[in-house]
Image 1: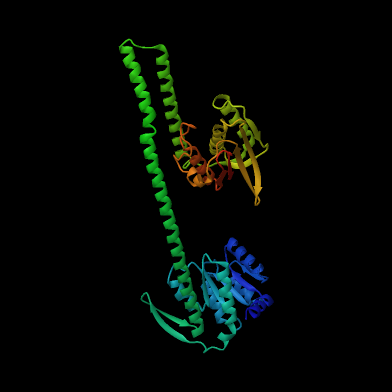
Image 2: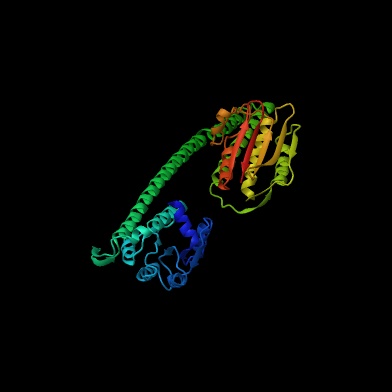
Length: 419
């Protein structure tokens, strides 16, 4: 049966009436990919003339078109004894029940709702062409009157045609219901994501209340001690210097945490302006700044030249700076610390990596690594706020990319990302 349908279509052609250039090209490509000739027209009048010149095997028509709409085009085809038996499919959004009445009045054979699935469209075509000969042997035309929305309508179609049309409407309704179910599933996913965001917000609140309070309390405590020592004339120069050093350390820690929190917050809302960014040059500049003051170990630095990505320069700088800062920090205690920045091709996509030979971590904890305020090493081992990698992940995902990591305890870590 399917072969005879395909042969029938391949011997003739499909006529498409569609005023949208994009939709017409899409339909033409759909049929031609199946070795079916397709002729497209901009309106019903043009399509009707084409059908008179060369009879098609099937007609697919939009409804809203200039000069002659889809309903009028269908009526003219069904009123012509030489064209009347042609299967006529109407493309519609099916937002108004009146579409069904008008389709029945015009004598349409089937509805295809927009947006349509290619597989569904082909199944409808196969069905109509297969039943074309059966319809010729049907019970003949019939005329019935119906009342709908306080209006009287006369329907002139055979039983098979009416049944086909109503079945297509029912099938469209079922498909819409499945779409609603899918939309409900996606809504549930969004609700789950919202719960995750709320959990992050709770975590953020705890961090602000605890981690920020701790350095502030330290600053205040040492300041109070200095104040008491001044009042009692017991100020010891060396002890005072130690207190001042602790005040500065606590102040720097608080400043860093505030900066990290602000960076994390802004990474979600900053507008993205894409441009070509030379990551190799950027990495060299970041490494030079970080090793000048913060990290003075004898690092072996390798940066592949010419790595370029299309990204927001300001945001990708923040992401790369966090990754390189971590690489330098967690490898600084290694006997021969090394940091490498490179790229590789994976399934035709450029992937950039930042690799170190530092402390590493157990991959069982990798899932929590990109969550805000989660740290896999104690602050006594390595200082940090636990916000940097969360910011990196958010920036990469806002670029439509992905980030992942490979690591093992004592064997360093490699972070991979694409944008």
